[in-house]
Image (tube, rainbow, N blue to C red; front, side, top):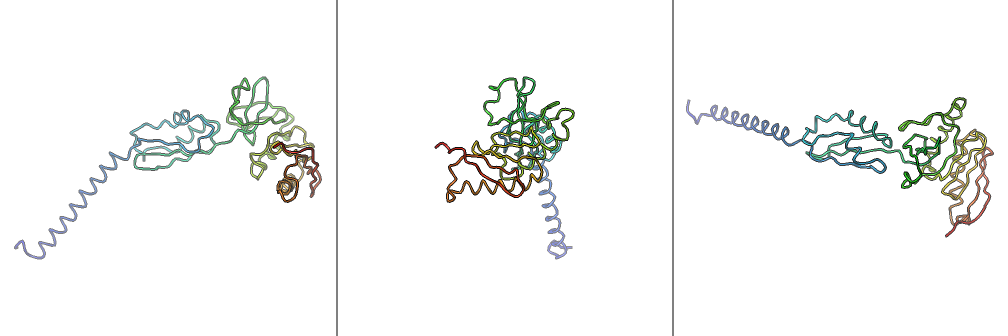
Length: 262
């Protein structure tokens, strides 16, 4: 059969295409094995945790193949060793780079208990324990009055003393509702130690008095509406400080006590 025969040319073309495909596949696999290795690890949303501690907990060795990373194991290790962190996402952001994206609990409150200062999240999760105020002076945290505490473990929610368990759960429920609404991050003092006299302070400007926790969600919604009304300059109260009472179901009242300092 002559080399110019159409069948020979067809077979030659098929052979060359197959060979080219195999060579390309081998090259791609070699490139993948040699180059898709971690050389850079970045952190995002790391505001309160120590960056060195997060990276140490992740323990990602440079040169490790990026597809050999155990994301669940790394996430668990980071959350276990860094109490501010509540969630971890890890994504590949390049051929050789990974990004660790954190979700953190913000420090909101503090209490003094047995000579120690406990730093708490908005839902009373313990974020740190210090022996002196100077140690947490860099944090924007505010005092909160609570029921008696049985124990506090970093990374866990406060445990209230025996006899106060049910009321303690109720306190945490109230604070959880606040953390999920527009007042989140605005409370600069809180007193939930008395079940029928719940008091919060909004931005050092308004004292919010709820009375009992009954219908708290509805009361909270009315307080938010009242704050919006008061802070609207067109209504003439935007410079006023005072007490917002929401202890009567279905209504609020405002008692001015002063003016905001310029």
